[in-house]
Length: 230
Image (cartoon, rainbow, N blue to C red; front, side, top):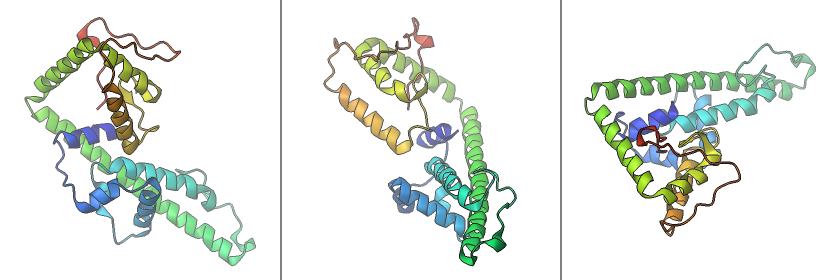
């Protein structure tokens, strides 16, 4: 779903302004971004609305999941996703430690609320993209032309095609699709830039360096070739 949202934003199906505040969040380190998400969860009356930007909803969700995992043990929760009953005897604990457990439980509830909000926002974006794609008569024709262009590039530059497939294979969930749980948006962008830079000196006749595992066979026909990663 997050891939679809980011693609929809890049293709103009979502109208989202790139404000300085959104840009600042996009370039934050994972730790700094997670701290921002934590501060937003603690504030019930003052929200960081920039977190709802289409290009930030994935990072927002990752940070929320990390916060839940970190807080659950402190809160005595059943799991990162379920608060569960409090089994700790607070009366037997020092006052400060007891308040720490209660505060952790309150914070985990707030994180769960933000996670539910993130899910709602992401689903709304995905539904909007799907509807606008269906309403656009040129969309199907554009997709066919785009796929034909990708197939032609693979046929005319087989060494580069095989090199890209080899470099992406460790991070794929399926041919040409990167695993978002392994690489976040920044890491995917960095990987793509490195692969493109490696292609610059690659001669057309070069033999690609393949891994020990057999590569996925390239389809015999253009129609069956896997889609490229965006």
